[in-house]
Image (cartoon, rainbow, N blue to C red; front, side, top):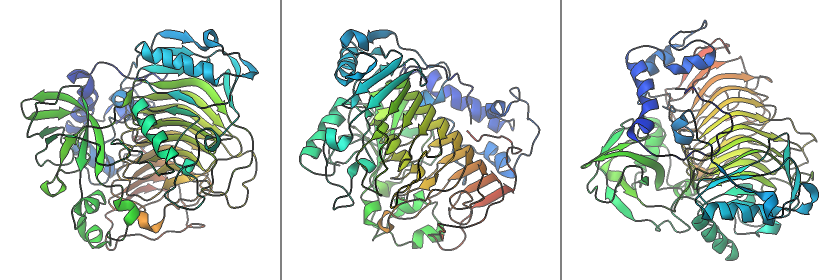
Length: 566
């Protein structure tokens, strides 16, 4: 499911939407799969296109090649990432240098106002790149990228450093937490570099002033702040086309929300878990935190509109059934084509706070962002590293979390879909963990689906499936010292849903938890993992009966082909 890509300085990702651009990558994968030939993903393992490298091809791969969009255990993630993972992502012309707005890379001048003025000018002029010089720039405020097609670019993560001095509780304020009491909302949201559309930012700050918990998704602080564009006829998971009732308000290139409500029997939630007796007999009614995430919202661009027949840029992630009232709706205006690259964000080296008391020394967060990119960025001494909050079709490449240790090195939540995190590193903490703190690792929760973590090195943390019914996510070609713990309270529902795939995972400390998932995750795949055993946090399956989970090439790593599932 891979694409041959260049990762050098992409500079944002938005571009004209065409049928060829949207469907080309998927056509290559599907054509190879239907013909029985290996897709281009095998080239990533070091072989020329069309040549299977030496190694062991698991039966699951051969099955997947025959039904790539509807396989029961492996999700189709060949379109994950910015512009569907397309090659040749555009570079945006330079339109501003922060030094022209008063920034000085002397380590003592507060450069946040100058950087934000330059970003605002770039946004008002229609986009472009804002450059940061080599050296250290002090920032006493948060940096906001609020306009589409604006890229903030440093001279490289080893040359440009933004040295933050204040946290989000101080800069923005505290606001109501889902956990109540003195718990921090900044454990799950907000970054000192914050990419979010202006409309989203305004509603968030209104909620913060009112000390309320804001809904952070695609439809605003109130879940009724959306408008139906059209209802949609029943369809099956994996379909690239749908039939709509009224196409009059749909145009090729539009970003819309596919919205699915649940019914009284929670059959939508059971469907996300793979269906069958186990999911159907599960007690859903008392999972109040989980049910607060519904309706399910999936942003997708329209590739073509021909009468009532609409072609999507990605295949459907779920069935569309009448009892779930499928419809296409409006949403908060997205941030698209924006990015951050070539810099290090460094927070003060102060002790990590106890669990859920993060003050908000957070790194880079993308919120209500689509087709955006972060490349060659390091964050150091942060509470939370890189965040995806209702963000979809974004790529994080060559990112690193370093320093004193963090609560969530990466978090992916509140309906984030189709993102790609590749060539990532979580470094071992530089100071021992204070009492009462927690490290989760690469987090996914809140109905998030079809996200990929690829080619990673994790010197600490774990694969944190944080409940909240995430499904169809992939972790592949990762080396991990599995010393973190997953989170998620009982009201957030099951630990795993259908079509989690762990492919070529090297566990350096031999701990099985959250790596070898054939005993926990329904309709899942664990392929190519070294021998591991249970210790520390030990979980039991949430669903009764046969989980329909697959385990192949156990005790084998790197020889599995393809080496990288994406």
